[in-house]
Amino acid sequence: MNLDTPITSHVNTLKKALAQISADILTEGDFHEKLAPAVNEYSNLMFSLTGVNAEQPEGLPDIHTGHGRAIGVFKAAFCINEPIRVQRFCRGLYKAVSDKLKLNPGRPVHVIYAGTGPFAALAVPVIMQFSPSQLQFTLLEINSVSYSILQKVLKELELTAYVKRFELCNAITWKVPDEAIDIVISETMNYALLKEPQINIMLNMISQLGDRVTYIPQNISVQLAIDRGHDSLMPIGDLYNFNIETYQKIIAQSAGQPKWLFDTTTLNYQPVAEGRPVYTTSITVYNEDKLTGGDCSLNLRQPIRPKLPNTASLLQFTYQDGESPGFIYNIVEKKL
Image (tube, rainbow, N blue to C red; front, side, top):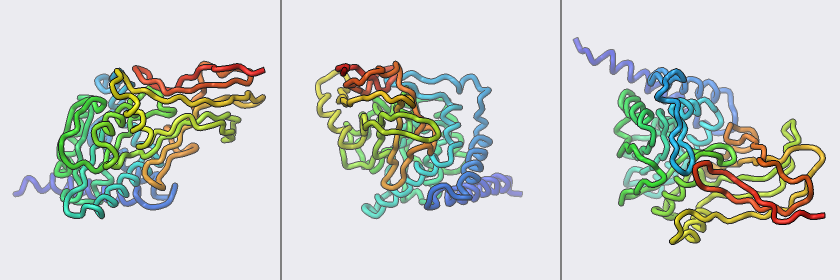
């Protein structure tokens, strides 16, 4: 009697389910009838495999990096439940891998995934579309609980052949190995770039790898707008677009400095009778795959604090690095 047969059969069933989930998530188009059921099944499969839940005290605390918090295990895992967010990031990564394979068909595409959480949720649907000879991951995670769970789940799913290395590390300071890197993906962000270390992770990677690598997301834009309710927004202006060009500018102007130096954006602000000033966030994941409006929690509107002045003013906005990242503003001039 072959005792491995039931285990093998179970793994094959899981991988068959993941293959269908992957196909449904990566289907072209916006929200479609198969997307939410596929993401729901994906979430149920990963949570049941790992046993991650909100009752586990070791999985709840955030880790403070000095440049934003790395969210706890359960909160990181729970991100898998947002259909459009999962769709756009997975599909963007899939297309980026496909594009790199066309450029270098003779070797596997090497992806650095910084901040995997316990599931590497953006990687697994993409893995199901390629062979290990086509795709390899370096997986970086700062939380030791997430790190252990991730190793266990990929081993159980027999997907470790796709992993070049696991690293328990801080991606803000991690040293990139001297080898071919094709793509860096990190989704370690909050709406309005509050509190989490996305920007510092990308600056660390780009300062070492330059522009020969594809970075996902390609652009994160934070804007000032007036929220009039009922999905009505009045745009005031862009505060910052974080992309390869602006990252490189930040790196260049910060040379020799003890911290990253960010440009300021000056806007003429005119109060309006109705509505509240908010930060809005738009994300270009990869080319046409974007997250805007009310697509997911990363696009939530963030009321500006402290409140903007109630008179016409010239305002200066700056991205603030540190333990609690985010945008701050100064009043340059009040106008009569």
